[in-house]
Image 1 (cartoon, rainbow, N blue to C red):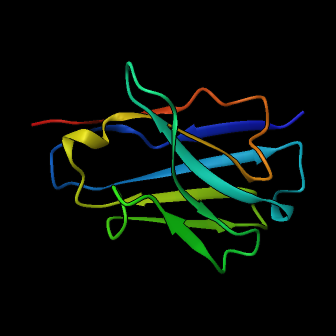
Image 2 (image 1 turned 90 degrees about the vertical axis):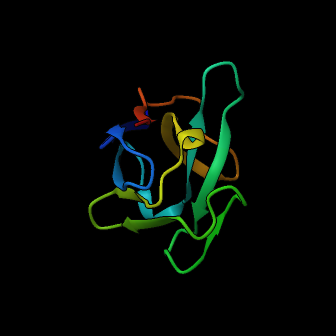
Length: 117
């Protein structure tokens, strides 16, 4: 069974930065395109961005394009999300999961990001 463990969240002021990490186990990590998702209270979970299995290609939602960067270390089974110029509307619980074909049914506990002054 795939296990996903996210970390790196916290409280940051608007304009600040955070780097999230996600360690995946129970799968051959390098086979899959991976994504970062987020869910704010009262809202549906949304895909923030994704990266190809090799790391060559990334795509981002319009709301984070130019501010967030996804990267991965296939040898270590780790996915990263560098978040810069954070805004209050970025506050959410952040999760990693497979981006294609569909997310795995089991999700990690997520890591909370709060952007507030």
